[in-house]
Length: 78
Image 1 (cartoon, rainbow, N blue to C red):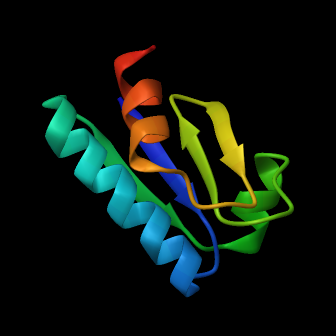
Image 2 (spheres, rainbow, N blue to C red):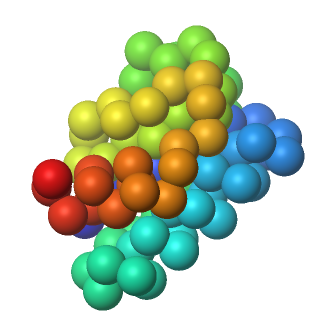
């Protein structure tokens, strides 16, 4: 599983990254979490509001920090 957290590095982006890491650990899955802060790379995903979370190429949230239950649902495919 490939998870990308898109954002310039603000506090909300860091929080989104922490939540995704915690959700991966709790779910017990193997995943890579990449922090993408380059605006051109972010724009290539069609995202113009951060933070955003992309899992295996699918945008899961834009412009907000996900909750841990939301993140777990995405990871487990619920």
